[in-house]
Image 1 (cartoon, rainbow, N blue to C red):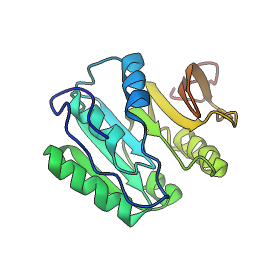
Image 2: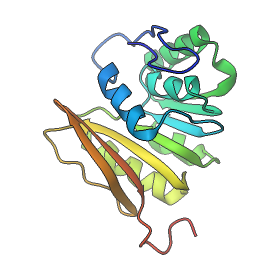
Image 3: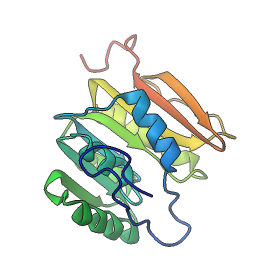
Amino acid sequence: MRIISGNRRGLKLKAPKGFDTRPTEDRVKESVFNILGQNFFDDIVLDLFCGSGANGIEFISRGGKKAYFIDKSKEAIDCVKYNLDKAKFLNYAVVIEDHLNKALRSLDVKFDYIYMDPPFDRRDLYKKAFKLIREKELLKPKGQLIVEYNSDIPLLIGEGFVEIKNKKYGNTSISICGWDIDESNICG
């Protein structure tokens, strides 16, 4: 696992040990960033269910202003801190070790991008995350929500969001979502 592009291109990252995390494959990550574009100057990013933190670190490497990393696993958070230190990105990061509900409710920031990669077998977490992101309006009006999920189980897009693009990579699928502009109560 490595940083694909940007000022830390090629830097190898550590993954948490065990089976609780499933790092995003390099080919999937590279494809996602090809879809999103190459420059993220001044963007603020949330890496939700961050595992190793590789997705948020990729955003910083490509010019992101700040990345927030959330995971409930101490091992994952320790790994994120190690990877941020190795990349010399600690000053560009906020790392939160907590459960989804408490972590998202504590945030008082709006994000340009949210990368959401819950455990594939925890469909309830997808639903909860969509709901909390909507309730707290954590995504900027033109922000994008990137959702990684198991290709064998259709993703139920949360209320208030619309799918912009979908790509399949073997057993992993990526959906890029934005606010549903027909929802009059979303973001003004």
